[in-house]
Image (cartoon, rainbow, N blue to C red; front, side, top):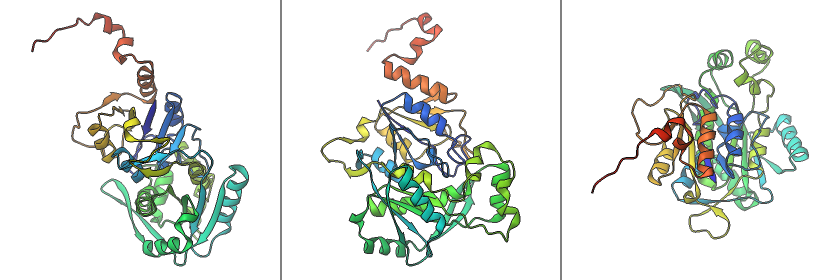
Amino acid sequence: MIGVMIIPTGLGAKIGGDAGDASPAAKLLARCCDTLIVHPNVVNASDINEMTENMLYVEGSILDRFLAGQITLQKTNTYNRILTIANPSVTEETVNAVSAARVTVGAQIEILELSNPLRMVAKIEKHKAAGDIYGFESLRKDLNRYGLKNFDALAIHTPIEVDRNMALNYYRNGGINPWGGVEALLSKQVANFLDKPTAHAPLESVTEDDEELFLIFRERITPRIAPEAISNCYLHCVFKGLHRAPKLASSVASGQVLAARDIDFMVSPEGCWGPPHDCCMAASIPIIFVKENVVTAPLSVSYNYGISVDNYLEAAGHIMTMQAGVVPESVRANFSETILSTSKV
């Protein structure tokens, strides 16, 4: 059984809207199936990544294309050659993070210093994290000069500019993670250009001059944001995910590949609807909506598709009934009291 778990980035999801706080739920769902496809927002927790061996780490726009049947996914049996790109001059934090992943994960990683800085500016618009990106064309030229055949996956380690009051408010009060939206926009642009696994990790740019923000992590903060507080590099989760992330293949590729037709279910927060949901509905793939995982700005329209459950525990139970080949209602007490009706043509 193969499933997909999504938690849209930058919508303030109650579970998974902060820093890897959906990891326990993902581990539970992964135990209920053979393979669980997740995107970085589900499991990225700064320098923590608790994804299991049967999870596949797939960038969001690549996941959209996969579910639409435009590409297939080729599992990586060994490892990916990861290229890490960073703004000039490359910091010691980046170098140390690469070294740490090499000696603990066993990853093959090289660093490329961009010829011009990549600038990312975070915003929140209409209750969603968004942002602006400057320097993408220069980044693309640098990667072409490096050689696209010389790496399998790309990690991007550059700063994100966030209004200090917005950052302080998030760390102290929670809400929408302002960094996630512009990260998702950049990852989509780069992944569509490369057709390779891609993920971004922000490099901390706060200096000691701003004492209040610089010392924010010495305060006691909400547990769901705590993974941010134990790191100022945030890169290791990306290396863990990209190390064996699946490669892309055409929709007609042969061999051991996964296609949209192989997906048995998708689990999503309640109140979300986007390209993955459209693709699942078109392909008659069941969508399990989790009521407890609400988002900051839920849809006000009814989409009239899918199965609604109260929480991820119930979602796991529903998946297990699928695995067992029994109708979910058949394990409930009132099922035996239902009188079968007949229909006439």
